[in-house]
Image (cartoon, rainbow, N blue to C red; front, side, top):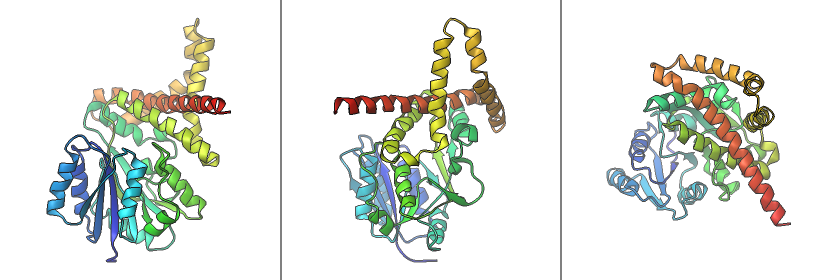
Length: 328
């Protein structure tokens, strides 16, 4: 085992309920040579106290304060404090398997990869939450986003909670602080543009607490869709088919509603292809669930993801267009 220092960066804000479990998982890594940097983004709950309690028990943990509430800024503050050769970007919500850091470092030491990430499986704590977790593991829900459902190691365009050579992250200028969301995808795009490859390896296991209600899921995906516009304006060629389909669906649904507002049967007929796909995917996904209540939430979860993402995309695109017109 390499004894080179690895820095784990964990941005956190108001994560009192989860930061303890996250730090427990990081402290239990079978790769012990760690610097664990928690960057608090101005928490108003007990997050900081939980971190300080853990610091008293483990001197590998350090606390950095970020008053700006920005995740990319927190990541860059963690980068500035990093002393390790390798960098692992983590969140306060998930937990990881004990071998996560060791396996990531093993892959990076091969010299073939600019970044390595694992499989992110949702965890539900309610009937809706378990349905949402199952929907997140479906191609119908997330398209070809491999880290949600992939079972074989392969090169990809984006990794979750990636591990990178610290020198590479610094050379690329860290994370873009102008992006409120999607900063990880944009960073991975720049990694690939710089000539480096990204590896998805399902042997690196991540358990991530998904949203626990359909409205929260809708708001989350609406935020994702809005954030994608910022990335698309910076890097138009970063768009993939899975990014285009939800806005196209929302435009189609709006168009059919407009031309069929006096004819509900026509509306139903025009939307049959999506409804059939939704029903088929819901039946297949619901097989993983235990209760009728959980299964009933599956189509709602899919719809919230698709429509929330598409709605957010169009909303942000409209705002960007208005802003450009006003600044002409």
